[in-house]
Image (cartoon, rainbow, N blue to C red):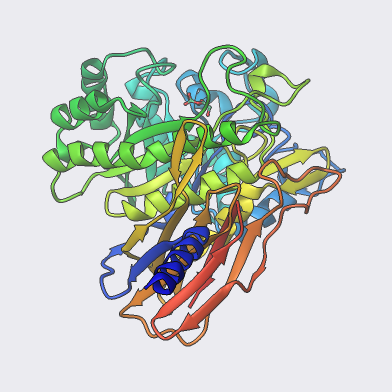
Amino acid sequence: MKKYLLSLSLTTLSLAAIAQNRVTVNADAGKTVISRHIYGHFAEHLGRCIYDGFYVGEGNSKIPNKNGVRLDVVEALKKMKIPNLRWPGGCFADTYHWKDGIGPKAKRPKIVNTWWGGVTEDNSFGTHDFLNMCELLGTEPYLAGNVGSGSVQDLSDWVQYVNFPSNSPMSNLRQQNGRQTPWNVRYWGVGNEAWGCGGNMTADYYANIYRQYATFMAPQVGKETIFRIASGASSDDFNWTETLMKNIPGKMVEGVALHHYSTFGWGPNEKGSATEFTETQYAHTMHEALKMDVFVQKHSEIMDKYDPQKRIALVVDEWGAWYEVEPGTNPGFLYQQNTMRDAILAGATLNIFHKYAERVRMANLAQAINVLQAVILTKGDKLLLTPTYHVLEMYNVHQDATMLPVDVKTEDYKVGDYTLPAVSVSASRDKAGKTHISLVNIDAGKPQEITISLKGLKASAVRGRILTSPKVQDHNTFENPTKVKPASFTGTKLNGDNLTVTLPPVSVVVLEM
Ligand code: AHR
């Protein structure tokens, strides 16, 4: 008896030493498609996102470009499979008058970018430049209209300018400016952060204004039936979503936005460094990021009350981490580095979007180049891909695949006052019948073993890719641009319907079955 007790307690001990995460992938229960548009990006006239990021000017002989758009950027974003790109803001959108950005560049008016650094905006990158660039990238444009300081007429003119094929004042103007056929833009934002930089409106006031703008945007101009996105709530402002859903007739809106940034606070110097942080600060960022699950769930529940058919999409058109700018850079330019912390944040957030794929059908990481949680950083003619880029590239196998629901029983990851789930998981089956499982080990201290039961799936082989690095602070620099990059992953054991995976600390893995 004593011997039995001893062996029992030894077994219990060794079990306790190995992290015990259990996942069931319900491969027989997939019914919802993960829209590729949740992998969207955001390009604002902010700091070096457009100028110096996407666009280096037609006359630039040092950096290879097409019509001023960097070709190395085009190549990287195409490889990542960028499905849509939001432009021109952000806060900038509600100061932007699109007619300033058309016609001969030398004649375009110069304005002040009042939100971002007070710099002069010469309007050399305007509607034609952006929409032609989207064609080059093979991505769908998402135009954010000016509600805060624009007019109903201006926005309705913009729709006509870019979408109307035949004879009209705006389409004729487009043709005079060199573009014969319309671009057929589908996605349109009706203002941005109307509760803040978009006009400091109340939810009731904005709901009324929205109805007016949406009426004159004419759902169909030319070939394209447009998809109108109402300026949405910040994080947990559930009243905003409730007011919009209650007061905007369902037939007048196709999407309602939501913004959520992971930060330490909005006060001066409160946001912390992008690269120098403790494990507790890392846990704080992840704690903020994982709130996305509750926010999406609660905003969706409100939308369900008014739109049980889920016709209206929840569009998370700004998300990501927000830190202090890199030392010595313009505080108004929001230029920050990007570490493994951001890769973990991206992987876990995308897993959340997959989980709510029925309602979350579009999202935009803020922002694409040189601003906030960027996928690309540039310096002169140099370009680097951030750890976040690699996660989005690895995860692109989920675009337009059928989401497979997962049941996750995870260990806790405890740091200071924070208790977080150690692992985050999602799965999907693509059109070719391949199943992909994305796994994130949030734990910065321990490997995590996960036993995955593959329900309704006969897998014969598994292969995978991993993104990891010894330290959560690790990042790519212009001196060492490939310090953090994906590698092939061999930490799996397949045994019938069961798969065992061991994830190193701070790692993102995508498996293909
Ligand atoms: O992405 C930076 C800014 O964050 C955007 O301009 C604004 O919409 C948000 O507050």
